[in-house]
Amino acid sequence: MEDLKTMSFDEMNLSPDIARAIKDMGFEEATPIQSQAIDLIRAGKDVIGQSQTGTGKTAAFGIPCIEMIDEQNRSLQAVILAPTRELAIQICEEFRKLLKYKDSIKVVPIYGGQPIDRQIMALKRGVQVVVGTPGRVMDHMDRRTLKMETVKIVILDEADEMLDMGFREDIETILGKMPSERQTVMFSATMPPGILSLTKEYQIDPEHVKVVRKELTAPLIDQAFFEVNERSKTEALCRIIDMQNPSLSLVFCNTKRRVDEVVEQLQGRGYFAEALHGDLKQAQRDMVMKKFRNGTLEILVATDVAARGIDVDDIDIVINYDLPQDEEYYIHRIGRTARAGRSGKAFTFVVGKEVYKLRDISRYTNAKITKGKLPTLSDIEEAKASKFLEKVKGVIAEGQLSKYINLVERLSDDDYSTMDVAAALIKMNLYDENAVEIEEVSYTDKPRRSSDSRSKGQPERGMVRLYLNIGKANRILAKDVVGAIAGETGVPGKLIGAIDIFDDFTFVDIPREYVHTVLDGMKNKKVKGTKVNMQKAAGEQARKPLGKSAPREYSKDGKAKKKFFGFMG
Ligand code: ADP
Ligand code: MG
Image (tube, helix red, strand yellow):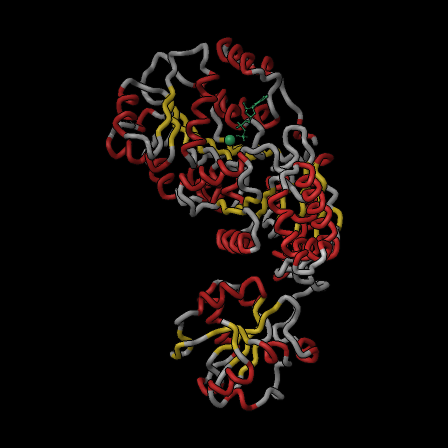
């Protein structure tokens, strides 16, 4: 906690105009990152500042940056680079608030998407500070509408995000055009290797200012973890959501692809879920965020980087579908809930040995993360039933049912009891065909060719057996099958279950939630030069043990196969 001591702005000897503006903004005292960074930056040091979102980083560089501008001089003196248009605008607004009593200093935002002519006109009037996205700043440099020769200070805000978005080269080009005696300041929420190498190359003797709040707003965030299997994560996620019944939840995955997969699975089960990640166009992001804000979207599935810009205060639950790779990320993720004085919950899935990594996170963040038990199917059923019955009571209270009572009467005329009719309707509403039991998990991933699944004579729980029309005769090996499926469909190889290869065909067990992905992805694809046909193995065969005892009739001709076992399409 020693790094949390704060200063008052009065102690900082700011110029009166700025001090007054800060008072108007309602800031009482400097935040920890401001307390540490402002003086260093003002003293001309290269600084690398690290703290979580919402800790006032903009003013931490904005205040000293403004203090260093020579207002008599109309040439460009400060450049701030930011990853997105929104952020550039936001920073610009904060600067203008700080400049409320100092209108001789001009700030202009420069970003893609806005007509360049308008920006050129604004720049021609003479500005001392430019806040821009790297691409557009480069553009202006090429046109010579921005001249970097007079720049005294450059600030990279959300540097880690800029690197993640692929701006490294642009940043290097821009920095390369600036005078070498300039001051270089970076702010970043995390310190991945890319940032460290940027620091090494472009900063001179930098001061690293780091403020990690070890004690989060933890009392308000209820934190639990669940030990799950990779393949039961989606089921576990759905159960938690069904049980907790949150209005807004935020689900974190480690990669864009995972985000898409999870969204697809959730949508397939009827949840209002959408993805937020770096591959989306700005307009798509805006759309998703709008839906999330107005509540038409219940579940947002995001990567760490994409979630950075989420400014929604009433997220009830954060779920770490994947354990975050970095302790800092854990803090950032769960900090999305319990904002503005509300309470919130954070749930984390751990697979196998990840439980040890979670222990490190828990130590690092000083947070108590309790072991949770997933709701069972009957818990969910009970919760759904109570909710449903409440809804029924509401509908009855509203009245205006005569039209429907007529329909019930029609059935009673046919000798059905109203009790049976009501029960059937409830069944139609509550029955969940996707519900599957989650198996107990052990600390290690099960080996692929699990022999106990064979002795039980059926695919492991949660797995579906697929038929593939090639076999030993095509000289395929298990690794070819895994390679083909993983390569064509993106389903991680380690999730693929038992594989049994016969003369002319093969059976493969696939987690239920990936069946469609695999069937779609394998359509018209070739394995070892042979065009494959993949379908669900049905009836008997889906339940028979895999092994040498499988009847030979399989391998002979297709017709016999169909007749004996049938295939679902
Ligand atoms: P970050 O960049 O670290 O995510 P911002 O600079 O966007 O954080 O600041 C988050 C919010 O906190 C803004 O609304 C900002 O005006 C406000 N803020 C910044 N500094 C202070 C302060 N010293 N006291 C109170 N509020 C502050
Ligand atoms: Mg910021």
